[in-house]
Amino acid sequence: MADSFVIAVASGKGGTGKTTVATNLALLISRAGKKVQYVDCDVEEPNGHIFLKPAIEKTEAVTVAVPQVELDKCTGCGKCGEICQYSAIVAFKKNVLTFEQLCHSCGGCMLVCPTNAIKEKQKEIGSIDHGSADSVGFVQGRLQIGDVRSPALIRQVRQRTAAEGTVIIDAPPGTSCPVIEAVKGVDFVLLVTEPTPFGLNDLMLAVGMVRELKLPFAVVINRSDVGDDKVRQYCRAEEIDVALEIPDDRRIAEAYSRGDMVIDVLGEYQKHFADLAEHIEGKVYAQRGL
Image (cartoon, rainbow, N blue to C red):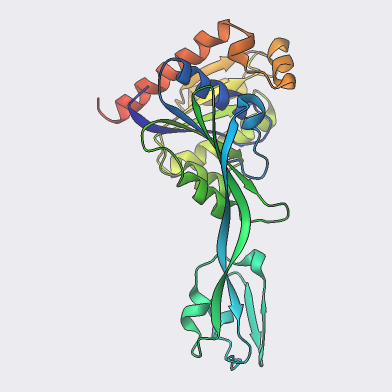
């Protein structure tokens, strides 16, 4: 692979095999003697650890700043509520209500308060695990149950990515804010899909997202020999590169159910993922004009 770049593995919907592709690609690159880090940004349900089985060396708490109001200083002017676009703070008379789950930690309410009645306090939203697995550096975020601020946690996870080598980011499914936070600024995106009506619909949304972000990308079709040919037709019509097709192989499903790596159980897939790594390498080099 190239000396230093970031690949995001994403999908328009869940259940397409995104984590299977991300973990096997990371392990394959590592066993080729390359420095690689797997980063699980699917913070609401991270599952890369099931397959890579890392030894966790450190866990750190992640917090965000939320407002805390000193009511004895508040005059009830309402300026804090006026500036907040998310209704995370509401003032009436001399009472102020804060809704921490809605807060985006912009600090605007604190800046406009004329009496300095608003201070910041830290609220824990999740954690980040650091470890390693078979020479693969491992980082994963875990959002606290009941919390909704996954973009804030993903932003912190992205800040822990390695400065050298290849970084494989396992993005959340879909095309909403958490996904954009996970993939923005990467060097290449792999979109994993399946040949079904839902797979095609959500692939089209994901393609629109990466094109809007101006990110180079290719498609992986999982369970490629089931369903219909409409995903391939769409990719041909849109001149989208299909980098890999993975058939509906029962042995892969059995390996997945056991938490085993495909490239360990099925030797022929070592070449498939090696070819995928080489394909991405060529695309990245081309983008860089090398």
